[in-house]
Length: 244
Image (tube, rainbow, N blue to C red; front, side, top):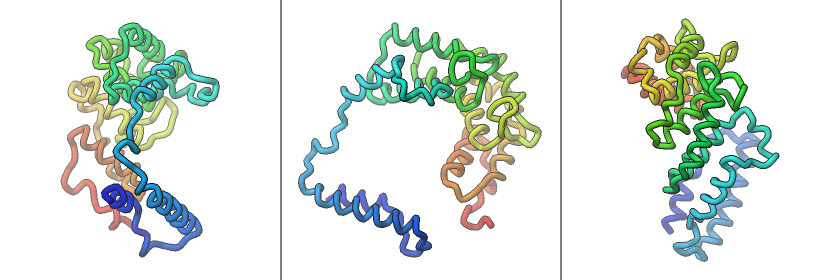
């Protein structure tokens, strides 16, 4: 019954919550899933939740360079796809070949716009795709991977994105939000720019802290960002439940 216990632990407690149409539909769906789960539980054995590693590895290797037309809407997110695939293969303890590594490095280098990395070759630099590209390079665990990054142009580009209030534009002329600050901090940490140019994040911790809300995803981004830049004052993060 351990699996059943875990299943119920995953469910949110809505006994004291509002009864909106959306929440009622959600609870009905969870009830149906719970019923199906319990019916199948007695039939499961140790192999029921087995991860088919070889199938996943074959799929990931096949999609690393040959994506079907259905992925065309990810054209501006190619470094993200590369990162997700390389990271997944790493978690599966699969070592990509030297030939594949060289091709991947060549592709990522071609996506490097003066400054950061774009969504693909000839696309302008964006903090999100720069995050994906650099995390992909780090996941490759090669000494020469991070060498393709032009750190001088990268830091100059990030300085242009950094705003007087501490926020970061996601691209030149773009919007500023906490994901931009988070991506910038992660990129700076992985490339060593954070230690070399601490002024790059002047006022950023204060700006990020001012963005607290009830949105859990943003809360995660805020806390991790401040942790990365090692600037988490004890009174910075207030209890969100006390926020108006």
